[in-house]
Amino acid sequence: MSGVLHLERHGPVGWLIFNRPHVGNAMDAAMMAALPEAWMELNTDADVRAIVVTGNGQAFQTGLDVQQLSRDPAALREMSRRTRRADPRLTAWHLGVAKPVVTAVNGICAGGGLHFVADSDIVIASTDAVFLDPHVSIGQVSAFEPIGMVRRAAFGSVARMALTGSHERVSAAEALRLGWVSDVVAPDRLRAAAQELGQRLADNDPQAVAATKRALWAALETGLSETRGRER
Image (cartoon, rainbow, N blue to C red; front, side):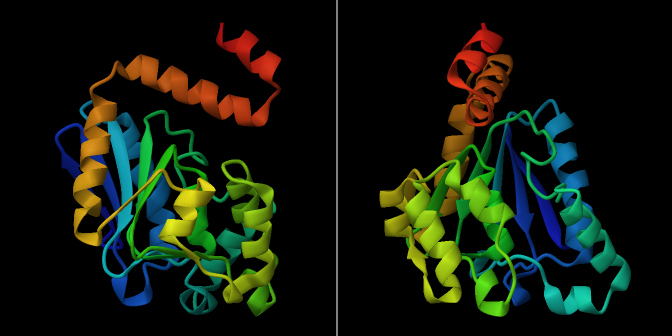
């Protein structure tokens, strides 16, 4: 796997770790190209029953590395193509990963990093985690990330973050209150807590877990009666 992503396996838990700490784990062309392959590798590994996503260094994920992309016309065209088609191909949800995904936010989560929060099954965070969406502050429309966040949180809190841009920073404690994350732990406990949660998920029947995950996500996209009828 590319050096910009680390894949690890600890027992039944697979780890996908962003590894560009010197730039806040921002996504360059290499990382964007590697993400679909990384997700599929973990999703098809029979020994992996749950997946944890986190970042090395002081940041979890800070979105696109616009400086690198500006120097790589081919990568910029590819990202533009994905955006036009509403097919970013960055997260487990984008790529149809059936296994349960835990996102462990270890620091700053900004802009495109919110994709991984919005599209995760379970999110936990360290006490020093911070969430923000700076798009409008630099003249860009924020669409995909807040739309995803609205599915798991109250509209007002997401709209405030998206519309105020870099002026609004949501702490881990506030994210817990808002329901964006389900648990907040000390920074030095985050990976252990994510591993423990992953192992609890892995202890369950994998087919039942996959079907339950599918039903829960379908409920966000369809009506209540339709979803219940389908899952019967």
